[in-house]
Length: 128
Image 1 (cartoon, rainbow, N blue to C red):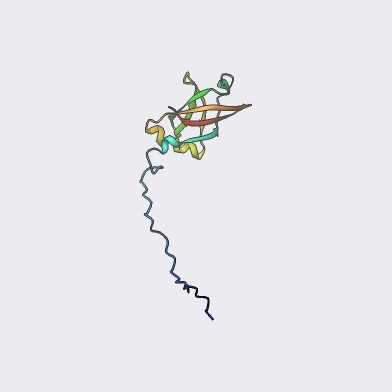
Image 2 (image 1 turned 30 degrees about the horizontal axis):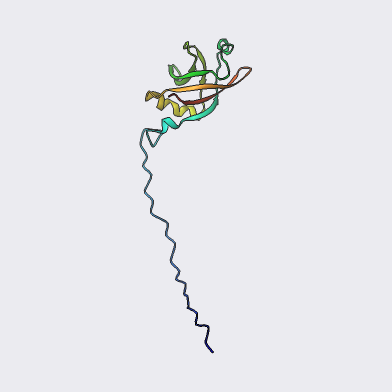
């Protein structure tokens, strides 16, 4: 009787080792790890402290400018119309990232998406 003539396999157990990973490089004094992160900023936010005198002149689809303003409270991200009149401010965590990029002279726009009473929703993106 032939015993099947099959090959005999043996399992060799090797301990699992994770692949080598480099330690992440973190720049000090910066919110970003790469210079092109300013180009990737794109988010939706609500304007704060909306200027009631400007609401009637703002329209859905309008493109507003995003600038830095300095006051006794510090540096703020301000949204202005084409005449330079203040429409409102951005204070969300995403907007805080804009400060460093605006200081690097990167320009941003705010597209008006929705107006409901005194609430203005805008999309923030890098200006081309």
